[in-house]
Length: 135
Ligand SMILES: [Zn+2]
Image 1 (tube, protein in one colour):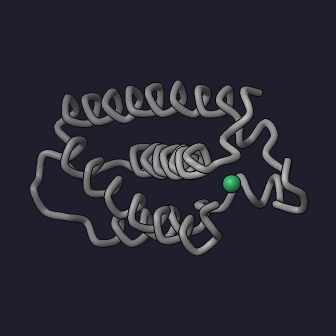
Image 2 (spheres, protein in one colour):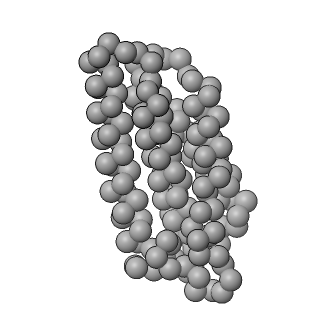
């Protein structure tokens, strides 16, 4: 079973990687925004253990809804919808002739990172012997 440290390390790396992907896809400039990278990395670390905080490992069958395939599917749907909104906001901004990324895009990007990092937590737990419940 991945321990808390493994989740935090994976979440931190995933947060940083997600920031780089979002920045490369949503912005036309090739410069990396270090503030976005740092906030995203911190967000990834902060939410990496969220399912275990909601469902603490106090007994062998602690994995319930927030560790389930259904919750994972909801996260997948949420990530696609959030990504669509980010792309739409970026297109609207560009159509208005504004180059600087908006606060709404940054906020949506952080939501996407939270979703991706929590999904990663489920993936890591899903590959353990105990696996994940359906619901
Ligand atoms: Zn877990």
